[in-house]
Length: 376
Length: 253
Figure 1 (cartoon, rainbow over the protein chains, first blue to last red):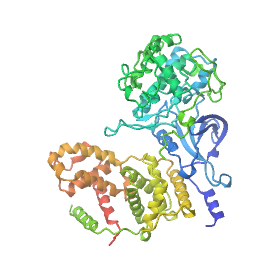
Figure 2 (spheres, one colour; figure 1 turned 90 degrees about the vertical axis):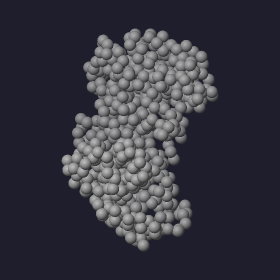
Figure 3 (cartoon, helix red, strand yellow; figure 1 turned 135 degrees about the vertical axis):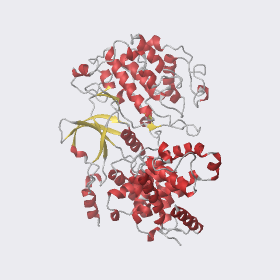
Figure 4 (spheres, each protein chain N blue to C red; figure 1 turned 90 degrees about the horizontal axis):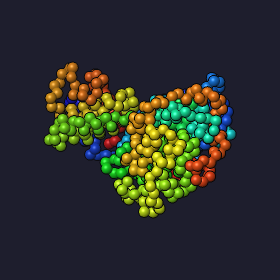
């Protein structure tokens, strides 16, 4: 084949299991994921069907398909649950002269109308206690499921929690997720600790732990739960050090008395850990009038990851089993006809919980590029 | 039964006089040749056994979907190794894959200079990887028989007793059968649990080991504690397929 024939061959190559992305019509950009942009699109063959298309960034063409994207795809193929975002298929653009005969790939998801950060930033969206319980319960249901399947999310934050117009919560953005196992043959895991957006990052990661597990997601879930009342992230540090200071101010001194073994973490001696009284309940009871809510949060924002509540314990907490019981969000959301995404929302107003007015940080893996769990 | 032992005997004889295969003279041989290439290159690259098994399975799956003669099976083999490394979190460097694959095909040659040939080979592997993924619908996660086999063998260790277990290399032989069965695309046709059982059965029979408290009856099989849905004839079929694999090995003498 000569060059022209080759190009023709590539252009006309038929992939029976990989459709072309032009079967969807892009409507708007709705976000920026950890490895690319996200668009809302319409299925041309079924105009009532909307999808979210996430572009796979082929940043390093010479290394082929990114290992991170491959990991996300494999995790999404494994996870099929009501409270986890559903991957429909993977599409590609047609190879042509325009893209130098290199296709672009898109992950195609069921479309969700809102994300939690977007909803919380809109003052017109008001959650009743029962509705809050429903959101938080679904959050733990999703976490219980992914942790049972030995997957860590590693990027819990309000913007990654999607809500459909019917009030169904979906955990999204598995761009940083990975499979975990309890240490192999007694050799501790050596995962990267440069994961999770700073404001939701648990103390063990901030202190350099690399042999971590599901509790990292439960810390984030606790932060999100509190946010249901405070309406903005509860600890907004601008550096790892400041984040640890904010955590200490809320959860008390980080020391071996409350957290045996913390002294062995790599950064324990390098970071400044102020002596503080624990005041989780005291500070949050102004927002969270429900004593069960305060109690559950108190069990999630626990410094020692081995004592932090897991998803199952959280689901069994009285918070979900006392009046008002969790109730459907669909009705309340029906009052809001506009999609609410953090990406599209105006900057949130400062609240009492906020100490500094800052742009929202993104996951460290993106922010300080090069620290992602990349093995090359 | 006699067949089995003969095959083993043959294997041992062959191992005594290993001469390197010249892949360039071999045809596709129903997938045996590229699989052999994957295992040879993969071992030189010190990939994990599961990484090599993944590469072999991806290669067989790929050729099941496409017209075989249209693709260079060594390029596809090298590319599945690269992809398997990513899938198994056991990354193999593309530079190493190119050097090893090149040297395995052209034995004794010096490594490729960084030049046009190197870059086109690299681009070919990367593009083939994208092709393989699309042909396989991006479904590149594989449930291996290995984990089932490990679990079954662990349980059998106590069942057989320390003495027998220590004297007869049941685990080693089962694992060898399993790896070798990856040379044949028929491995795709059976459930991983069934493949695991068949490999162990074959090893037990090779060494004439009988499990205590199990009678050889029609309605009872030793493996019924592990798998419920494996019929006797299917069980035999898999064992025969495993043995067949050895008949497809090219004569190297």
